[in-house]
Length: 188
Image (cartoon, rainbow, N blue to C red):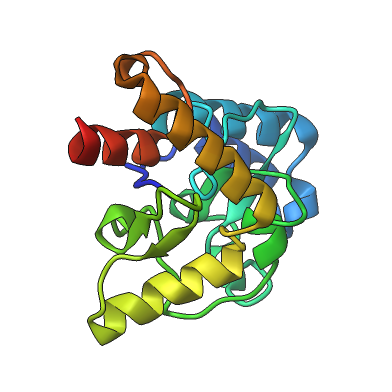
């Protein structure tokens, strides 16, 4: 999971909201959602799901309301509450659905790297700190997004094994941005 540095709301989205006055999420058509995803990918996320860190495309992604629109209807139209995530039903935003707690690490407001670390033997993501609040936030976020899904752990474990053997490839790989940095900092 990595930090997202949100940019200002794009002008095309502001104009769309003024002109169309959407009342619910269905009032946003396919084209505006596609344009929003493209904007977030290009300017904020580099075509990664910020939760699982897998590379994704516009077609295999969705706009994620960080604070779910069902529980926070006042944030439904707020660009600052959006990110673009993968569509995997077993992890990330699909798995999270409309669950929410203040313990969730919001990657637009907090740096997940302050809370999360990796187990290089298993590929699991673990809480970095034992301090109560940080541990609780990390543990809750890992569970609500199912970041230790077996498939994800296997993919990360393979990535770790390959890159610890050939550390010079870390500069050239385009997978798992925070895991890549973790390996560079701790195993070079």
